[in-house]
Image (cartoon, rainbow, N blue to C red):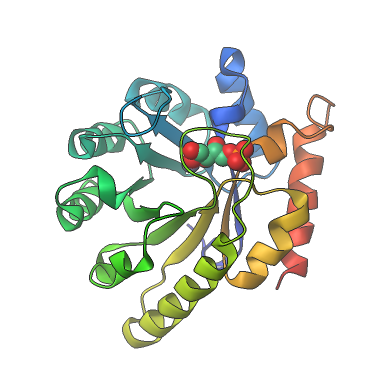
Length: 237
Ligand code: DX5
Ligand code: ZN
């Protein structure tokens, strides 16, 4: 990762809304269009009421792209999957505190397998979860919808939550010189992206905002959409 990339705002398409029949071509097109990372939603039909893809799909797309693969685990038994996804080429892995008996152990396991570690906070999950694990994380993923599906309505209270977490990160980073990214996931559209950036988010997961956009399908569709998002994120500085 270059220093420039480390400091900029990142956009990561969530391939949950991609065309699964052409997943390889989709991730290649998204990278070409300027995606900073690819967000990979893993669901097991237990932790959330939906079922998606596992490590073998991650392994299949890994050689096609060079941007990081960000694995969002919405499953039970995360520790086994952490090891499997790390070996399948994931670069970032995040876990929900409700999905593991030992949050700190799972976060350490992510790092010891060579990936960046993230904690995911559901809309109803308090931010006090962060208090004792800041040293063990590289990013915080704030869910601005309840996990399980793409295309849901953004939950407005997420903005206050992001602001509070931004304050915590800034205080912590000043003391420890450790960068922690603040990622937001769910219901992000052109209309609310600037405001989320102004609240302090720096990493944006976008599903239906990209894949259901009217420009998708046109020859330069993804590039145009990604540029519109990037312009909004710059204006939210
Ligand atoms: C929801 C997933 C999200 C989802 C976002 O459980 O974690 O990553 O794909 O989709 P949109 O942007 O459509 O809300
Ligand atoms: Zn996600």
